[in-house]
Image (tube, rainbow, N blue to C red):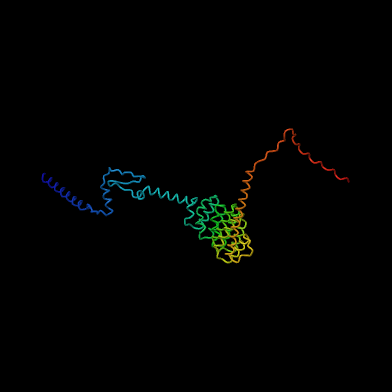
Length: 331
């Protein structure tokens, strides 16, 4: 009986040893992982204790400490950067319409024309004037034409920028600017302002100004009320001119004011005659002003005579009787 038990125990022991041998043989040996190997994070994660909870960071993105799993998709872009990105996107959408700075950003010409149309529809001339210095130099003549139209509707505020467009390289745009410019110029009442703008209009293109435009400018100048103001600006305009055809027109205009005994032989002579007239005119105006001031002073110092009173025992003078009309002649 004991022999059978010993035999059974021996068989069981051999079986257990065999199973243990095969189990140890099939068991996967641990693979050493270097610090640079990305698999280290997976190995460390498996060994991390299960009772460690991830901490929360600003913006609600999940992060981990102590080996807990990291949600890289959620934390790839911090919340602050997301907010900044959203803000920039919103700002760019707002700038596409109603933002003044958007006008000067590079954009397709059709988009820019539509933006200018929207500004004009909204009567937003402030934004248009803010960027007029850049827009009047746009390479597309269609854009410049649209800007000239807008400056015209801006009234006197757009007249200075419209004046610079009189020298536009495109003849059609230059003519449009001139038409708008004349309309705005007629609203100026100050002689000094009107003459200054006419002077500036010639300075824009100088000797390259067309003869027709020079004639228009000089004609408008002669409608300025104060001839002294006209003379001062005509002299400055003529001094900068080197165009012989312009000289003829300047000589004719300046001689019409100075009225010399003989027609000026050249532009220098015309300027000299006008300067002489200017000095004489200033002297005469000063003398007239001094005479008027003296007359006012004398009137203020002159005593006021009281009405003559009747003497003692004299009856007051009776008013003169009205004249009796003579009888009509007999028929």
